[in-house]
Length: 201
Ligand SMILES: CC(C)(COP(=O)(O)OP(=O)(O)OC[C@H]1O[C@@H](n2cnc3c(N)ncnc32)[C@H](O)[C@@H]1OP(=O)(O)O)[C@@H](O)C(=O)NCCC(=O)NCCS
View 1 (tube, rainbow, N blue to C red):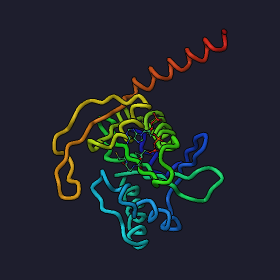
View 2 (view 1 turned 90 degrees about the vertical axis):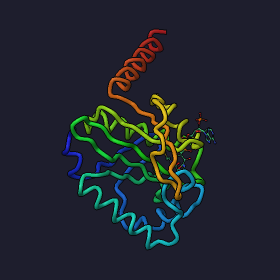
View 3 (view 1 turned 135 degrees about the vertical axis):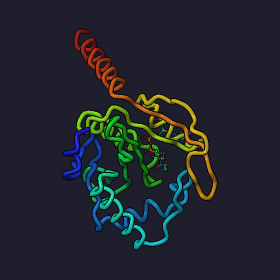
């Protein structure tokens, strides 16, 4: 695993989005995202009640980065100052080069393809820059939009981990989905072949 990635959070770019470090100036946006019960529905946290908690979350992002536990990016549409979501890589297992991915978007931005776009570039960063071999996600059953995002990016649904997470006081199962470096390479090869055959037509 390339630990240089913990020197500073790199800015990443997609067609429509910038993924960048989150600062305390983003507290109002973090509050907007995480005060929504719909965003918190399938996760362990409760909707946050004020911007002070948002500030604490941002400070936690910074501490977790310094301690190399998690890297959290803010998701911002190009041409806008607004942070509309976050995504992260964390729970690093250095020896086996493995990490867990996470993502949350403000509800008003759902179903525009933004999560798919952000997770795609994060997977590319994790595998090609951080030199991870495996990126996994644990999804609460019922969170079909989240499963769909990972399906679109060719993650494999590997099974169900029983009673993995404590969510709002209840132990719940986790659907485990993952992508490996070799999956990504296979995908890149197929894309290249498709491009080549289009050019030959
Ligand atoms: C999960 C989440 C990040 C998805 O973000 P998004 O930007 O809307 O995702 P995308 O637009 O890239 O893709 C969503 C896909 O799910 C589909 N979808 C949306 N709601 C769905 C539902 N209830 N059931 C099945 N599919 C659904 C969409 O149609 C789309 O698929 P398509 O492109 O094939 O049409 C967003 O819903 C969210 O922030 N939820 C709350 C936090 C959360 O659950 N985070 C993930 C924790 S594992």
